[in-house]
Image 1 (cartoon, rainbow over the protein chains, first blue to last red):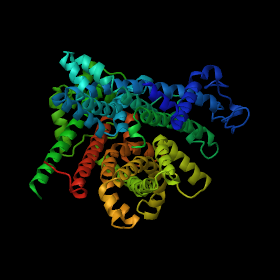
Image 2: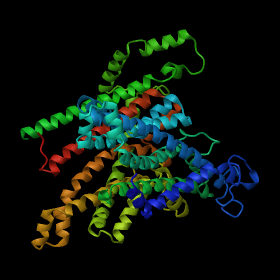
Image 3: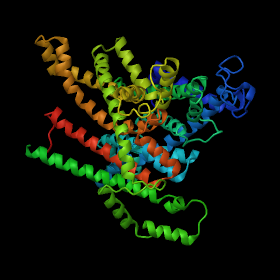
Image 4: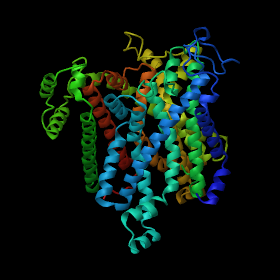
Length: 279
Length: 320
């Protein structure tokens, strides 16, 4: 990132609010073992369904477990899967999208038609197929989320590489006899990095939303390990009497995703002022 | 129909067919990668090698993969999607029973999204930089950040528990599925949940697309000849601005249908999303495959219609 882009980013108020939200949730997860007031699994029948108060800031759930502690621990699952799935999806999307944009012709056609096919199956349905076959585990969750999110990433990277390919410095590299790997890696993808970083931030929000949806369906993180999605399900049955059980984990998802989206938008503005407010 | 247009439509049809073949191949491949294979699910628990071989032979799993695919795809084309492992019912009829509620839900949500989002997007663009614009951006940003299942639960909390106005689940009261009023009351919350999430993208694109169009020369000309502002915006600018919006609506269909899985689960809505989720827990492969194939086909068909819609909306596009 050039200095001026960094300055623009730091001056971007909404991006900084987003970054603060993300950092707060990240800290909550990382520090959960030492900072959470209670354990995420200790049950207490005398403390069941306590409303938010001084002893339990966000109340307790149907087993008397502290909701705040569980929300903090839950952020570990959501963020870990979010980061893992995004990284995986970006690597696949960047390599395939870069190859499609750089080599063009047959490679481009083949890769992008496969991407189109992936884009036309609704992500959640495809995830259901894979989870049905391979079972629900943290690793599988990250893998299937990557499986359904690589195609949009590939599209973005391809478009950027297509545009970069015709630039003079690429022609110069070709003329100097640089190999495919060097041109693609050093000249195209490195210059596409801003686009990829913006994409990463927006995808993090997406993958966390998908993970929470899977957990809600019972196909993600399995109890007693708390994830924001399965906490909302558990809160569903106490909705009328104890709204806080479902409400707070959902708010945590919302703040985290909102944070990544605000930060991603800000990054885009910072890298490319011409695009400011364009989309 | 002129010749360029006809060949474009034909090409687009062929492409859609190819896409469907691609989708079916992906599904088939994933299915055959399953650890243990379908025979393990059918028998369940411990089983001998002979029993497995027998089942494999009965299901045709001992034949070459390409042949299996052709057999399966050929039957699917004739409307035979196999039978449910669990209940033995034909998958096609299971899906047919559930398709109606899902189409009602997704169609209603899309209608709601477009009807609310387009005027909001227009207001945000025309009154750029005002409170309307801020409100629009906030709605768009929040819309893509809400987990839909949680939004649905909060709506139930608000409009079903706290204020007992609307029923929290189901298609209609039991035995009153034909009662339109009951159906409508039950549809409000799920449609709203799915629609609110969908609204964000449409509203963002209406705004940015209209802003772009409002800078064009013909808009300046329209203003210069003294036309009223409302007429310039709604008649001259919006019609052109809506073209990319149609694209976004088309592209967002998979998300819409995918979102229906969660919405149907939250509201106990008897659609194909819940059928699929139930089948996953039962490892009922034929049902999962069938649902995915049909959903893929519906989405591809909808995308085809979106593309063809341009020929009506935008006469400038050339089809050479």
